[in-house]
Length: 408
Image (cartoon, rainbow, N blue to C red):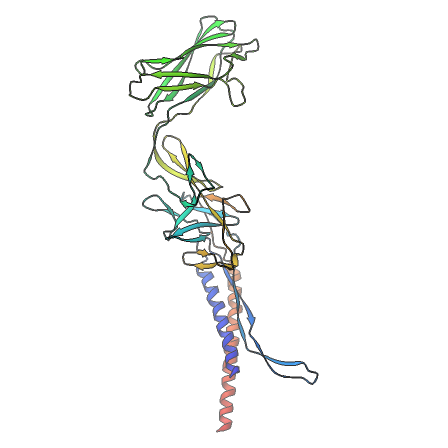
């Protein structure tokens, strides 16, 4: 009898709504969980006749689930202090992969595997762009993000140095002004190089570059002259000094070949000669010793950089983000992940902060967007709908019993 089948559809639909609400409430503390909402629609109608004016007489067959829509609105972001946690603020999904299957997630509660791979809590590899020749290559195929845990960064020999200084224009001829700067050889061993300036008077200063006794047996282009004009500006050399070298290093390192940056990036000299005390205010050089892995950071664009004990940071990859045209077309899989379908369309892969994609926040997690007050309100409505359908069934059961009793 349709009297029973119609309210049964109501019970089934209301039960689905109750299950959905229960799932939302159960996941209110799940990282980046997106709540769902059930909508209903009526079933087909049967025409049982028509009125005298020809209007159709129709009887409905009940209700059904029209859709289960996912609310992809932004959840709040909480700081965690954990370097492996990443919150996505704005549009997009992280790209993860396991066994060749690509999925997408908002859950940035990542961890490190035993071999240094950045993974989800379920063991899926977090995908991104690789580093090629020291820079992220966003044109390369996606690869798993590898963190150099336990590795040692090789040293880099100093190839250029510079200093910001003033030589006192009132200094008498023969006055010596020493300046020191630490440089590194090919083995990462540090050496304190000394630059001795000697005034010749008339805006001219000789210089001599040396290493501590015993550090090297020889060298080239270690002396020269600086010439300043009447305004204290360096006029000669007119370019940076190249070809400075130290040979026969006692620790067995390669010969040290250096360039002296007398001019900055704006082509302004870094050494002046005015009537003020001679002083060196800053030194720069591009070498460093070896360093042990200390940790990693992720910037707002998703660039993952490893930090080492020598103070250096090196990019190791960049997290990729996916944009989905029709998010409602995604299927939800275990672990708070999503998969694309024909309805959702293929994912468009890019980087954070571009093409409408959101940005990332390191050491933070996006929280669930479940609104408990809304869920409880929906729970009451779904409960009443379920009770109403139940009441209809009991009423029809009473009517059926009365009908049977009439026959007897």
